[in-house]
Image 1 (cartoon, one colour):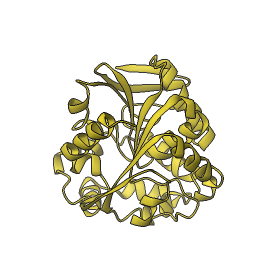
Image 2: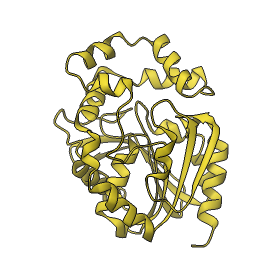
Image 3: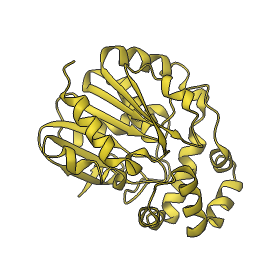
Image 4: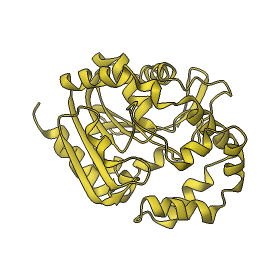
Length: 265
């Protein structure tokens, strides 16, 4: 389905009934990242998974605000637009982390629990090679223009060895010129220094909410030490998995989420 959220037109998966779970994907992905997980949870929960603004099949204006305040505001508009009126379970991966965790900081009363997978919300982080290149004017555009499907496949397989070529090719097919432009805008708006203050506020929020980190250790983009940076109640490691944990280990992640939600606070 497609939904208008503020100035954005958003492709959305909305499946199941029950307590709501909001899934926020990463770069350069779409809600397809959750396609192996949602079927296991939708018999018990309402699963809402958007393509983030400017990514996948969603569109956003050229001046969309990718600041932490802007992303938090957009997530809140989305929550209101889909009619969620009760505290929800939040699940984030990669750039879905800054979107969702900034929202959790600003609207903690709307959060029931938080699950975090391989993302960054720390002022101590330093960008990986592609992040540094994408942040550079002209160079970022050149890197995007020179990225072929074969090169894209090699890079994703380097970061997540168990990703199928079919999944990678479907992801690549959704990276339109518009997505490339918004991807560069997101990276250029996101300096780790922006997390100063926010990271401390998140730790406070997570002392009041049920929280879990699921961390894939074979991640060339985010060092394993950042798994402990959020202040979550529990951290579980996947030593044989890469950055795209929700795709590589969809069954295991779904099973772990079901156990987490079934446990008493």
